[in-house]
Length: 391
Ligand code: T4K
Image (cartoon, rainbow, N blue to C red; front, top):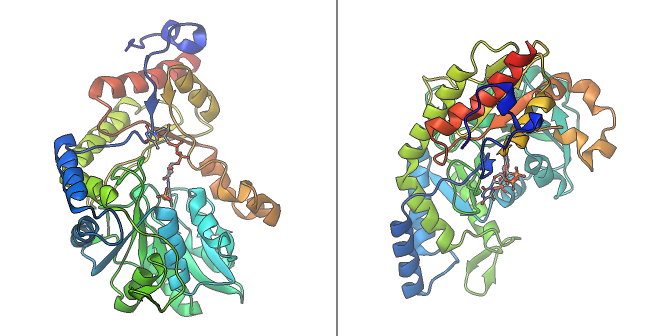
């Protein structure tokens, strides 16, 4: 690693990149290799690889306990978990979602011929703005999907009140919020159900994986049937269904990573605090804060670049990429600007000014257990040197 001290050290000015090996946002956190290999040996010995095996059952119990919920239904990924939850809740017609989210939130609806209707966000929290949600309700609206973006709770109480007032179903995409709380209560306990993602790039992963967590017994039962083709017993199908099952080896990874969760959170928190400190005082730069009164996983180190910054967000990204730092513009340009939603709502941007502004200002920086203090210092140094030179 080459230390960045002056503009002459920057790769955009012809120097060698700061990092020989690329730094990624979403580098997987992996627990004990030995424990994982032992679990895999057990799986092979049992010759039970899928279909609600013992590893999946143990994993579901532990995830449910961690989130203080009655049911965890583990699935093959977060997107299928969203699709199953949406179908089990009987959503149809139009469903209100933020545009400022990963594309899967919108796709899980449109994949089932439901129209995602995009509501604007609060520019401070990056979560749905309840007033904007109200404005998007039509006679065809059947539900709202809130997203706990960056692991910070959406405005649950306000969304619940709107849902009750208009007879709408409410569920949450909690893909970022594994192990997080909102107003002291664990995520997983809000709305009819909440959907987790355990993708490789998530702070907690099962290679690929996801789950729906809920306190509703009937909903849980329906989703269990749906994820396994609707089978209730051998040769007996009682419900339409799909193949949404988590496999044993994924659950084994989950069990190993559950044991490592505190170490990962501590690393993320340390990196987040370091970025906050190292980037403070730069004009137009801020690092999104987490409420220390809540339980947070700190999985995303989100930097915002305002007009007060002498360099643009995209110039910062370009500079970081030249140093082999693959910072990301999540979730630019917003779902409403991606095909096919752009054709569906060509003028949606007019109703989504905060979404546009936030999507144009965010840089997500690398964090996680693969980043040590020196690496974080050097990433921050690239940004500092670039901005101070232009100030
Ligand atoms: N809802 C929300 C709000 C979500 O954020 C997501 C997923 C979902 C729903 C759907 O859940 P899943 O169906 O995925 O379970 C990544 C992830 O693929 C995606 O899971 C995640 N959100 C999203 C925020 O980020 P990309 O397109 O950025 O992935 P990719 O392949 O560019 O990977 C990111 C970086 O991680 C790369 O620079 C490379 C690095 N990486 C990636 C993998 C897979 C590694 O170092 N190792 C790896 O194994 O979407």
